[in-house]
Length: 470
Ligand code: NAD
Image 1: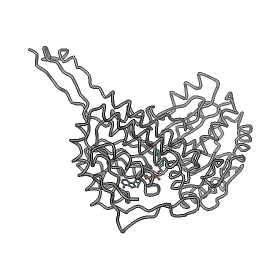
Image 2: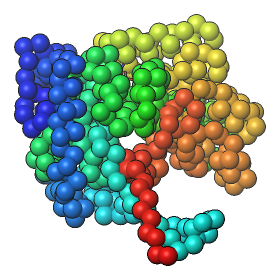
Image 3: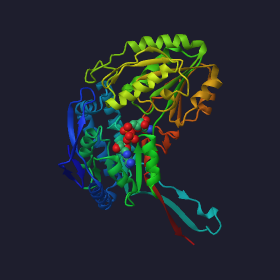
Image 4: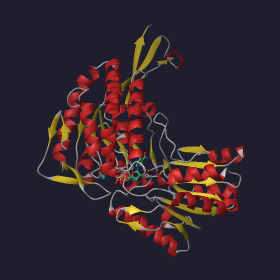
């Protein structure tokens, strides 16, 4: 597949293969763009600003609705491509496409609600007789950098609000899964003026750096790991940034919890997309009183999961994105076992597949839980009561989302108040997300919020206009 720059499809001799993580077959190739291509895309986006600004909000909204419909019509193609290039089970890929259709609809709705306000200037000294109102204007050009794990919906969470607020976009997708993003960008580009939607493929350290440090780009919206996020914040200079980074989300299960519900939440949260989700449940913090029963129940459920070919509609857990990722999971699990954790099931790697694994008696300081492990793991940390549970939940550099299962309202509210994370779910696991909610973490999990209304707010500038009526 080609890059899309200023309305033209660009191919190059230098290419990179995109591999199917399940069988290592080549799914497609993309050109390895360089700084010259990103500069062209930045210039094209800047040139597109006038025509884009001339589109009425009504036309923008119609375009976004039309794109939503087109994605819906092509949902089978999109789902299959997501599965082929990421290894995500087809049922989960279909869910991602459904949500993507919705994300564009939210953007279409929000594009009609970009309001300024009137300001009571006469409340200030010297303001008598002055009338002030603010308008929201576009930033100009938004650079969108995306990871491999949700190649469609996470790209849309950047380009849909950007276009809704009349900004031109340059998308740099992950080289592990760029095909879905290119297919999407081609559709989007047809509905907007030439140069408004560009997609450039290449190495993060080359084209990503160029995009981030350019003075002709007004905002970087990044989703990915903490290390790259830190680098972006150092290189971005005087531009806005949104960073949606990693997570180490806890799920607390107290002694009074509905255990069957908690186990269901834990299984859904730990194994979704083989654990390669920023808001996956990465630590199970379980009260001693119910830990034996919880461990037994989650092991039973984990052993029932179908593992294998992600194109099979019955598959629950597919491969990890590549063998390095699977080997990393293998290493941290083995390390935990060496240090005294008890393996209840799984613990085995077959190529890029890592078997769903339950580990008991895990300690907070073990690498399997003290940084983000992107794999199908349920590590149980046993605690005594709510105080210790919250202390352990907060014992991490991350703070994306969190969940607690309890029937005690006081404990639920205490956890909601004291857990230092962007969202806290009560009687639900952290993988809960609707596409209109304010989404984004605290601490090292990021900066700013996504969710259409919130992303649009951050992709506009406020201009004040003052009338002298004296
Ligand atoms: P990654 O950080 O390795 O890569 C993300 C993107 O950054 C890719 O497009 C990559 O090419 C690009 N990049 C690399 N170096 C760059 C540089 N110097 N300048 C600019 N861009 C550069 O992440 P990944 O492995 O693709 O994805 C997994 C990570 O993403 C996990 O940590 C996960 O938690 C996080 N994530 C967060 C969210 C969220 O919303 N908070 C959602 C999904 C994934």
